[in-house]
Length: 132
Image (cartoon, rainbow, N blue to C red; front, side, top):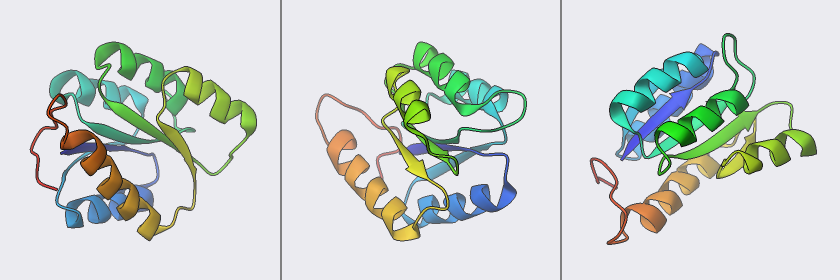
């Protein structure tokens, strides 16, 4: 499974990179929404973890564009500033869910496991690099 991590904080990118690789998946990295769009155009990742607040293009704006480029790519927004308005807007634009930062490492591992088994093991859904 290809997972794109989009965050302007190097520490968050590093931590998610480790967690995702340890779970057996391929990691792609972007520092902002514009970089994310380039990666989505070229690789169509299965899953995106993306920060809401970033320079150049934030997560909510990038989310809408990602869903237009690759409708099957699922997006999880991450934010340290969780509000009902942000969550509602994200869900309207097609986010799978929103998670609060800082996040729990075990919750991310569980999410990846559940996502993989729910989406990548269905006969009508193909995940790139099915490794599990």
